[in-house]
Length: 103
Image 1 (cartoon, rainbow, N blue to C red):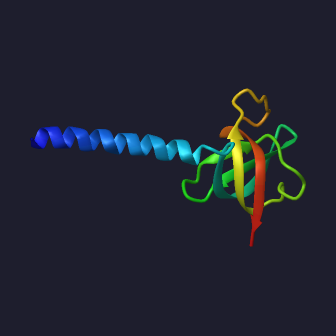
Image 2 (tube, rainbow, N blue to C red):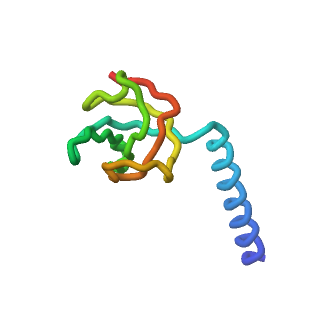
Image 3 (cartoon, helix red, strand yellow):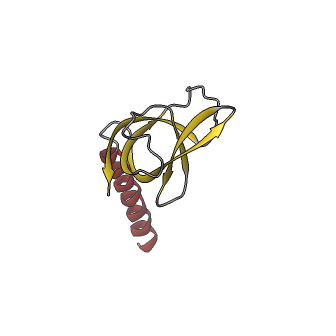
């Protein structure tokens, strides 16, 4: 009986986990909080977003002049763009869907 209960509880937890993941993916892209950073590489300015929780670097392949400011704190919705070609090649390449500046 215990083995049966454990097996069913495990299935239930996996199912709930999948459902929660699907609900959070309902909107386009995903949202993180981070800081905008830049650096020079081969004469080009490269823009990155550093995730505040994980310190993971994302290379921003899109963004406007209000976003692309050194040390901007932002909540940003991004989507992966693995096919983007850049000179910088740092972190995962992402496109900006939307953002909010944080103060």
